[in-house]
Image (tube, rainbow, N blue to C red):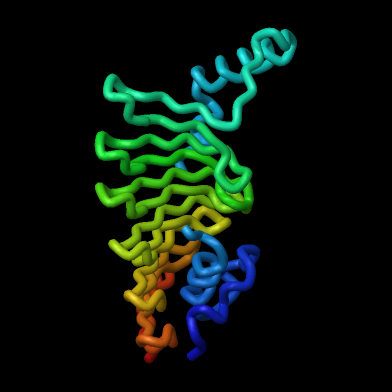
Length: 208
């Protein structure tokens, strides 16, 4: 069998077109999920109100405030909220009493919406994002910032789940497709060594 990573080339693959559907589940994940719920904001009345307000501000330049960074401080003068551009992308960052960034909301490198959740040391432990293709994903990281688990949907809307080791290799993949589901296992190099799949109403198939 081939290495998991060798399949991360495209999100356009039809998962039902192969006898080994787990390969294409991994293809969908490895190709760009790093790193969903932000799409729901488009229907939020508060967001619609902000958009209407934005149009009003554009019509009256006297109400426009332009700044490179905006900070809100508490009674002790500690920054608790920052609105700024990070690498040219807008971000809202919230800080705790110790000055650590704990929550970030903004756009990623490709303009995709993301939420970063950080621990008390400022390490990013979880990310919720939409990929540039509009696919939702949820990523968990360890203390050193290494991605260890990825939960996502394929382009067709089917759920997938991948577990990684401390070296970043994919070790376990679980998927549910339109016609089947299964689990795949890999060794420390990411090479697939076994998989179990079941077609709807069919007989389980085990390969190793």
